Each structure stands twice: as C-alpha cells, then as structure tokens.
Length: 166
Image (cartoon, rainbow, N blue to C red; front, side, top):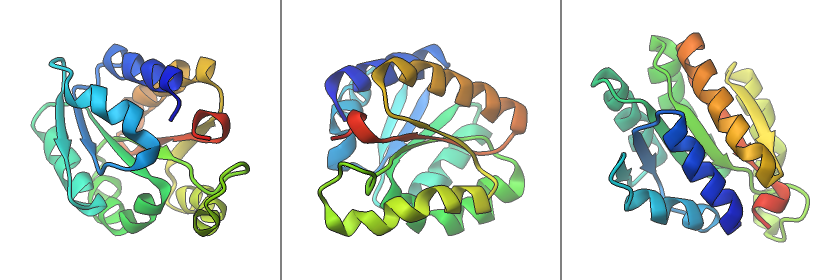
C-alpha cells in the first residue's frame, strides 16, 4: 500500500472509532499495519491465520470494542468459513480491510484468480463492500464502512486496489 494511502487509512480508522485491529501481516499492508501496531489509541493483534482474526474480532466486539481485520484477499477467501459461522450468522460487526490483489496492474500472476473471485465471493456472502483505488477516497470509504457496520450489525468490507497497491 502506498504511504499516502496508508496514512489516510490509519487516520480514518482512528476517526471512525475503530479501537481494535487484527492483522495477518502481508506485504501489501506493511505501510499500514506497522504504524497501527505502534498506535496507543487502539489495540493491535497480529494473528496466525485469517480464521483466528475473525474469531478474535468477534471477541473484541463482544468485549465492547470496535474491530477491523486487515487481510489480503487470498486470506479473505480462507476466512470465509469463519465469517459465515461467526459474524454473519450472529450479527457481529467487523470491518474487513482487504488488499485486492490480482487486479489490473498486479504483476503477481498467481494472485489473478483471487482478483477475479473476491467481489463475487463478497456478494454471495452478502457482505456490503466498496473498492477504493484513489488515496482521496480512502477516508470516506472507511468512515462509511464503520457507519454501515453499526447499522447493519454485520461485516462490511473496503477493498484497496489498483494504484493504492501497485
């Protein structure tokens, strides 16, 4: 993620009242998760798997926190079972901040199938989502996702794509 976009995302996370972030580190989000891990205004937890992240975010919500999960879209696909069995089934809000690999401009050929499948998978799970490709749109997308997460009482997603990543 480009530094300016990461800064905009970090500021929006704080402004939205997100006070718990779980992350399975990946290279696309390094510029975001490193500063988040040092921010005393929120609790940051590094997780070993996407499913763990979903469960930990559920616990954070039940404990009164407002959670976000940072994950690459390949990891999102791995976490679908946990999302369906947990937050979707029980109405637990969480913001999924997803690096959308496999989009146009991504030179990692092995990410392309995940690029094709991410949005249809979100749609099939009825997870409201928005794709963001410009730094100036990052803050509004995260703030809107936080509002929707609360009103829907369900997971929502912001996908970071295109020029924000490559």
